[in-house]
Length: 282
Image (cartoon, rainbow, N blue to C red):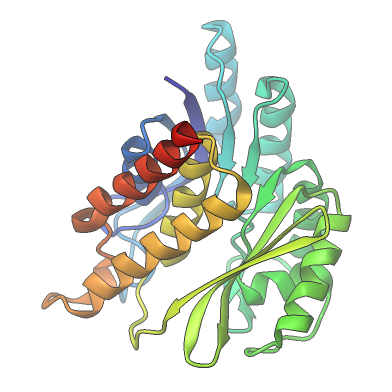
C-alpha cells in the first residue's frame, strides 16, 4: 500500500484541508499521513474560530520522522500559512522526496479575486518558487492569476486559461490544473501536460461551500496514485467533486460546515475501479 504525507491545516469541525484529504485519499486505498500546519477549532467559513499556529512544530516532527526512517510515496501540500512555513516545507520535501515520488502542491492563496488576508504581499513570489519542485499543482483562477502576475478576471476565456497553464508549466510544473473555469453554464477544470490540454466540465450548481478545492485536489492525487493518467485523474476528480457539490446543494443542514463528500465516496471508489478495469481489459 502506498503511503503519502499531506501538510496543511486541521480543522476540528468542518470538511476541508486535512479532514477532507485524509478520508478521500484513504478511499483511494492510500495510507494518508497528516502533518498539521495549524490547528483550528472550526474552519474559517464560520463567523469566528480559534487557531493555534504550529510553525515551530514542523521541524521537530520532520526530524522525528527521519529518525524513525519513515518514507513516503508522495508529498501533498495544501494551505501553508506563511512564507516561513513554505521554507520549512521545502526543506521537508528535499529530505523526504523519493525518486519518482510525486510532489503535489495545491497553492492555496485566495479566492474571488482576493488573496487571503493572513498572507503577506510577498507570498505569491515565494509560492512561485515553491511550485517549481511540483509534479502537479491545482490553483483556482484567483491563485493562477496571482502566480502568473495577471490581473484578476473572474471569467477568463479558455484561451486565457490555456495561456496561464502554459506559463505555470514553464515554471517547472509537469501537470498544471486550473479549477473553477466556467463556460456555457458549466463548471470544471482545465489541465496541461507537455503542451497538451485536458478539459472537464460538469453542470454548474448554485451552491458555495468550504472544502471544494481540497476535495478536488485530494481526489486528483488519489487517482494519480492509483495509476490513472493525468487526463483520467482530472476527469475523476471533476466528476467526484460535482457529485459532492450536488449532494451538498440538496442537503438540509447548513452548508458552511463544508462540502458533503462523505456520502458519495463510494462513487469515487467506483470511478477509480473502472479505470483499473479498463486498463486490465486492454
